[in-house]
Length: 293
Image 1 (cartoon, rainbow, N blue to C red):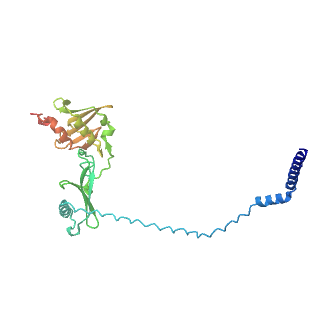
Image 2: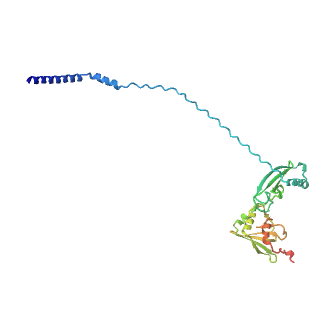
Image 3: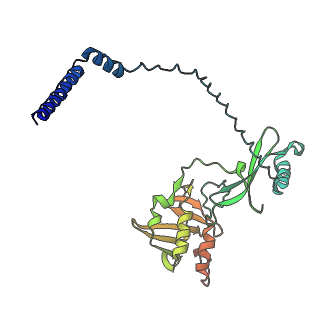
């Protein structure tokens, strides 16, 4: 039994000795070799940067030249033929003024429009209708190569204004409506003179529509001038914000003309006859002092 125990102890000792030897052999390995091996594994190979392939840079596309926009050719306005009245005016220039007929020709023709019935050629001191403004018509110029005569006609060529033959005036232009504040008129009364007493009496009150029309007539600037007052037959009384404004018209000495008087200034307004006439329908004709029966 002792022999068995001794064998076991010998075997155990041998095993322990073998383990120690193996441990020492493992611990005695070269540390530098291990370190070098580690460094070799840790040091990465240098990265080779590839040389970029040369790329052809495209040239900028040439900027196209702008295409010029064609300028439209204006359509020529056809020249209208001269109104028929031009032939009569040529004959008149020959018969009344002695102009050689063979030298006369129409140098210009065109359409136009004007603010009053005067067709752009008012007589000084005359007031015209403005109800249908603008007034359409035609103008034309007759020439003999040296002198020019201008004419304005209405649309149907029934009214001819001989512009070159209008009487010039040195009188200043006056706008009665502005001067007398007629635009503020709230009432317009037609008065008539009683020649037996010399006083004016009320005949009719003018409607607002006709009042507006009368004010528009006197809104024209015209060359009215001083003239001795006449024995007028009628009077228009405007009640305005500035007081009463009086315009007398039709002289007893010349009943056919529509003379007007305002602040000692004289003009003519034939258009008033068309406005005032209906308000006198049924009234007896006025009896003037020289005609008293």
